Length: 312
Image (cartoon, rainbow, N blue to C red):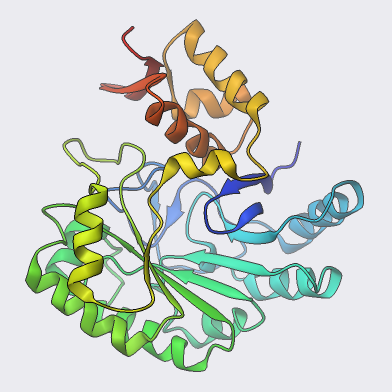
């Protein structure tokens, strides 16, 4: 079993995607209320080699030798990947070894203003930054940033990066009802989106329980209303968990193992990671489908969110 690689994960956007974890759980510049990975345990903007380049490289070499090529190699995982100072070396190594496999980077975008971060991403094929808020107040409410983050610098960094990056930019906007779907916030978001000029704007919403109780995901109708309100040609809704079952990398055996584990006793996400032996991002993909099919349900308790058989 690999320590830094996971998957391939059934991704709605990236098909059969091999994930590469660049930071420990949960090292991030933000502590977003909706994060499926869980509450941020190390809130920081300090860049360093959290996981060593040589160790990640060795796992990639082994994977390439013994497995078919994935559709994408995705740098994401348990926290903010741009915090790893070896990001550029890792991307360069992948492009050197497997130039035909596109490299995607999932990032919250908060460090794109940093010239070193921007330079490290230039060899990537697709960068998927997040933009959940267009005003400082909503940014603090949804994303709960490190105190070192300057909101205007973050937004200007997104805009500047989009002007210099030669690959594709797929901008993800996470819609949370009562947080950022009011007309004034949507107007401000549209204004920034027009400045960023991404290749695609992808509307997403809550799929798994977030770190706060009382959150709810936007309905398809609410997401469609946002799409129509903006009236932009390149906006699409990606919040559709059931579609994952149609992806080539979806594995029924993994679903069965997760279901059998939950049937024995209710489990938290961390419990499932330890017992099933899969990465937290992989587990979340399958839990979304099982909940949508009404096979399981989530219950918030003192120790966290537990998953159990529906109607238990």
